[in-house]
Length: 149
View (cartoon, rainbow, N blue to C red):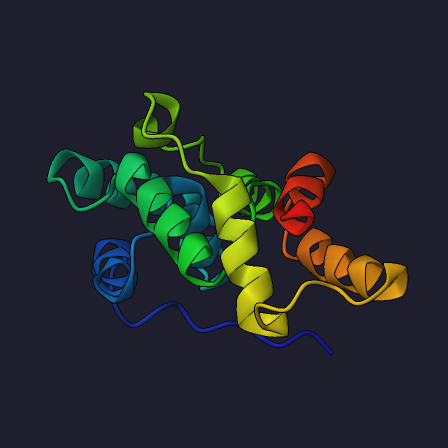
């Protein structure tokens, strides 16, 4: 038996602003979330256009926020870019314009936080640390350099 879905109590614009008040979202994320809540596609489009025009919705801010959040969690460039792609975002301009991140140093910090400052005792321990960093989204070349020192 099919259940009838009640129409949302508030407008799509109000719902979009409520979501944006919690954290930055990309346009794609908001479209998906509002559609899941039962808003009509035309209402969603109009609400997002208005939020963008008013400066509440910015894909650049959302990308920068996701980059900062990924860095704070100890994620590497592969994982951060995958999350950005899922949200429909590109790499933030700040990174693309030359504010390059030292991924080797970041990988070292992440590894030291988990395993301490002692170098790996043997090949098996090195491999365990390398797997950990790979799961965090660091590429192979960065892992080799980070664990070399």
